[in-house]
Image (tube, rainbow, N blue to C red; front, side, top):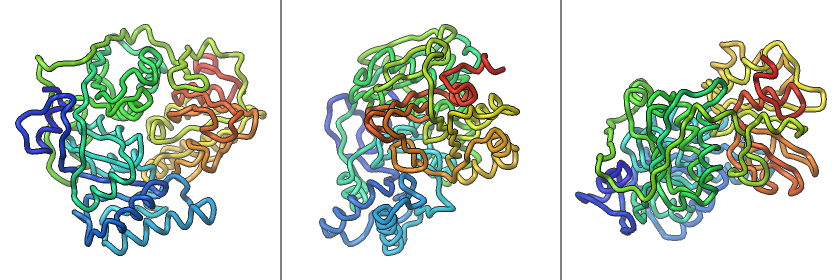
Length: 418
């Protein structure tokens, strides 16, 4: 079996499972945010459940329209707080203690290798970087899982992506996953588990792995996953709150498709409007002017991402025709960035730094685009109207390209700056 099939089998008390089978499995963690949790709470009350299945296995994180941007957002966030208090939930994270959910939960050691995690947010697949099976579900599935501790699944087929060769300078996990999506398309892994492996992955840092698994959904994937190794062990052992187990894929496991990529041939890339699969080398897009740069999100808001952006922009200024917004993904990352002097670098460059929020990624607040405006962002989606007006445009890149573009006022590569 593949790692995905093994984790699913264990969680439904079976010796083995096969792709296409419908199963009912126990979940280790259920999560939702200020947009999706209110629906789940409403449905939970409707079904008449007397209590949640486990007070310490349900995470509510207000991060999308928080800090609350208007009255409606405030009321949504209040629902999370009130429900968490009523049922004494141990994993409610208020503003000031929260962060972007998919950065916060791994950082806090709340998700561990071997887990089965569901979340009412499509980028729940991020946690596959830890060797867990994690996938996004609807709010009604979250409601039933909060009551029963279980969820139904169709066992996905697995695709294997093998990466080899040395990464070029300024190329990281974001470029690898964008390049992959550009190759297979936004439905190229539809309802499949995307398993990333190869010598390049084995030497890839955890933050880059989290970025890759985060965007499996942008290829239509049910999940993204990486077999855990020494890098995983080092990351989790100083964080985890409970026992964990490493699963691996059998050598004779079946894959619906296998693809290989020579990473030495991959440059920094950018996904152009209006699909994450519309990928081109960043160096080819020098004529594209921009109005806004966003560095942050569950995809690229970790400390390593901020360091990368700061390395490019240090001692320089944001172009006078551009606004640059930097959003550390958690309070811990924010504090570390202050300690390292990164926040000062950004402010000296005339960028603005925000408290953790998903805000601009989904056109919520803290960076909504006007008609005709263009942004380059380290976020994960660039659909029509994703970041604001339906006649605005979003380009997706890694933090170094985004920072270089902020300086030049157009899409640029770090080599042009450094």
